[in-house]
Length: 247
Image 1: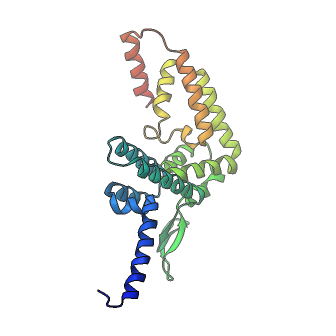
Image 2: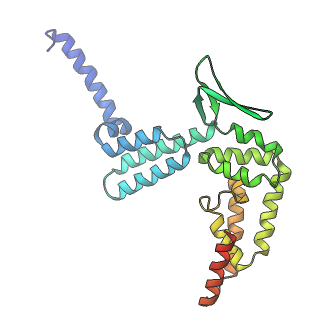
Image 3: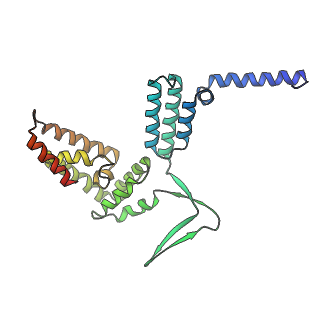
């Protein structure tokens, strides 16, 4: 213990101020008193994909519903997650690299940087392909797009709509025409293919969030128009076979 009375009193006053501020700060207090909140926050701060942020928000909700996370800490985490997601969406995601791959006429080589690691925009290679995209290469483009974090996918889609507007319009308008003419079996196939994980090379996944939402809305409308009160077993088997064949 410090023998100086004045220093002890001054130290105590500072600690009481810090303690008072800590009690008022839900975030800092949560990190110190709640293991679940601390773990969720650590995982959030290491996330590079907005889909991970969305998953963490769902986990926080489940903990709240199970009474393992207080409402105050749930709200604090949700606010932090929303701000972090906005940060990811605002700037292109970069990663540090110590080398790059150089392509030439019939060769490929790896070049190491002498001055250390450099920051690279991870979506830049696919962004560079947009002006030269054609209908034949669109499937590969969509598949590569699927490998990017969710917020980077949307960034590339918007660049596609602006950098190659003629092809983008063909994809968007052609999909609308397909949906309007589709049979009930084809509509079921579309409902399966429109989910990213099922058929990532489908053209729907190269459209912006707004155009995808419009396509989904048309798909729902057309699907409801084909709904019948009862579906015979034979017709259901034919429909399932059509989906399997189209996939």
